[in-house]
Image 1 (cartoon, helix red, strand yellow):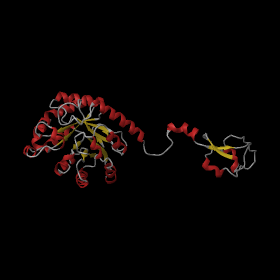
Image 2 (cartoon, one colour):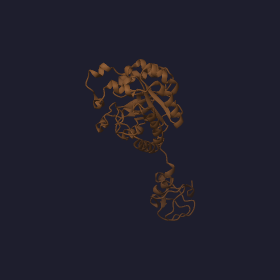
Image 3 (cartoon, rainbow, N blue to C red):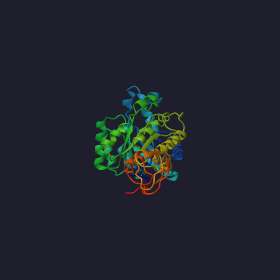
Image 4 (tube, rainbow, N blue to C red):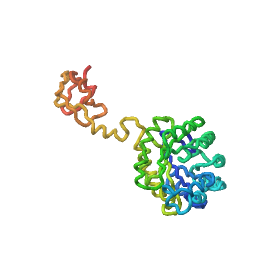
Length: 352
């Protein structure tokens, strides 16, 4: 599939999505700067979120219950945090233009039907957040827009994943399936729950899907593990300062840690190779000096029959040397010419 100018397939290098989300802190100038920093740090896509507070959260619903999980640390009400994190529609074209200027793809997660329509001309793909995996109507609505779909699957059962995937694949074959653990506490305990091996299950269930990881664990250990398991789309939150106030700063990557993640990931990706066992180019000389070939333990005259005890496997092996596993094809053959002790035997030295 293609996401804007990016080719994405199972053999492509990892694609990195910097989820700026609400880390603009209400300032479009900060959003611009974060786009620039994300590009400099090696991100391929800068992602935002398009929502209206009143269309994503219930003020009364959250006010009537204790704050849960990471929200327990928020000083403001949940509704107010979402209200302040909203991106006004007028920003969309400006953010897209800034991404084009910088040379990075623009993406967003739209959280209502109007936001889907508004973002449609500006994005190369849609990201569906984990929280909407059970809202089949919005999933179907996005799938019909003929843009690649990235589906995060945090805090979901396998049945919920299957239901959502079935809806998407009914209309759209360009799907990136993202394993995710929806916990934003930045606690090391979360590594016990990231469950990267789910990617193996997704590969078996959906061999045509591209795999990825939407990650909120500290650092990039989980990212490296996911890439080793076949993920080629990586999403992490991005900020310029982890000490800033705001819902997403604490667990986000910063320019320095992002660059380290990208560099380490590319090193790992190169190390994974194509999966086809062969003698690699950088092993050719080592192969000669490490592997053994058949050498003579004594001199052999022309016409003399070579015996098993006349041969010993020794290093090195030349291009025309005979490997030890072929000794049975040498024993019993006559020497075509005089052969000296401690020289290696070649097929051309033997009479048929």
